[in-house]
Image 1 (cartoon, one colour):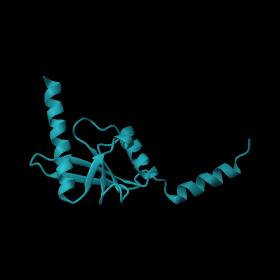
Image 2 (cartoon, rainbow, N blue to C red; image 1 turned 90 degrees about the horizontal axis):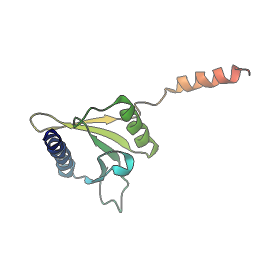
Image 3 (cartoon, one colour; image 1 turned 30 degrees about the horizontal axis):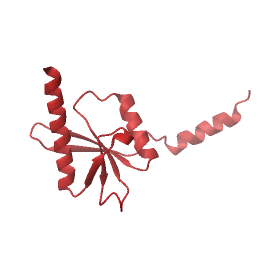
Image 4 (tube, rainbow, N blue to C red; image 1 turned 135 degrees about the vertical axis):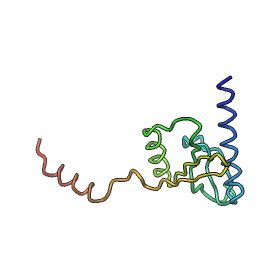
Length: 120
């Protein structure tokens, strides 16, 4: 019985997020190939690439490692990751994760200097 309730809540949240983006004018498609719930297109998928990968959170705990994986994957395929949740009043909350896990340039430069000065 508990699984049925969780599945119903999960569906309700996902549908609320779907409707939210449809209302904003996006074409919403499955994001399964990128590990997310949806891909968001500004127009027809025949004419546009998806700009966003959208993951609905709050249906189950989101592990840090999963968030990191989703953010890196979205960046690798030149999309922005949007995390969405639905609050108690039914409003959709959007959080855009944009290059959150990218190293600052100075960190990469110091790593290169370190490796260059290392001897085997």
